[in-house]
Amino acid sequence: MRLRRAALPYLLILPAVLLELLVHLVPMLIGIGMSFLKLTQFFLRNWSAAPFAGLDNYAVAVDFDSAVGRSLLHSFLVTVVFTVLTVGLSWLFGICGAVLMQGSFRGRAVLRALFLVPYALPVYAGVITWSFLLQRDSGLVNHVLVDQLHLFGERPFWLIGSNSFWSLIVVCVWRSWPFAFLVLMAGLQNIPGDLYEAAAIDGAGWGRRLRAVTLPMLRPVNQVLVLVLFLWTFNDFNTPYVLFGKSAPQDADLISIHIYQSSFVTWNFGSGSAMSVLLLLFLLVVTAVYLVATSRRRSDA
Image (cartoon, rainbow, N blue to C red; front, side):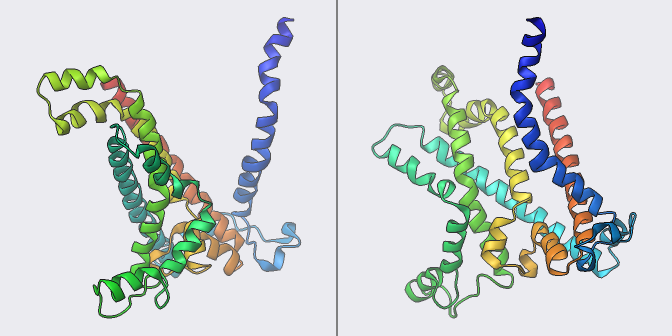
């Protein structure tokens, strides 16, 4: 009986562990193995015949004097700026919406439901709709800005050139901020009302209560939320792929699209796998540093 009781928890999680191995770990190990091969379209039918490359794929990827390295570095920097802006704006809109929705007023339930619509929509449906809205000649955005409000003399191109970067940020923030709103709204529900009453008695205004009560009490929630948003945004592939297609503009060349092009457009799967492994290592390092820093801050507090 003791043996059965001890083995029962492991038996219950065994299906989930096996599924995790099949879905995530096995493909990841295969990708790491591919990064050490000169695997091109000529060896897809017989991987064993692909020449062993060693660290050559990694050396080419980090050689910033070469065209491949410079393009990868540019894509990485674009992704960093894109992630910082998207995560920051998503969190800002989420905290503003969550704080405003805490008060009781008529129509609050309807507004909450409307705020969550972008998060509930399938990503392809939402992004394809944005791609139609941002069309130069037939899009609703140019119709309103140019034909109705007369803010531009000519119809801008929103999906090519430098405007593509800002269009991508708008679409990603539109998709991400409802998740931040939902998480922060749940976190606000756990803050005792007595703290706000005590702060109000002490003469603290709305802004002071926000800085002294709301944000400190939301710190554990924010730590997890920022990390999740960072990982989701940095690895986002669906949004730029659906919005721009297989070849994103240079100003919106996120690293996920760049790795896809290196693998499936140029048919150099070894180089693309090496870039993927480098991206995985970067995210692991950033995540570890972030967790260590936040845990130290909690212990110091």
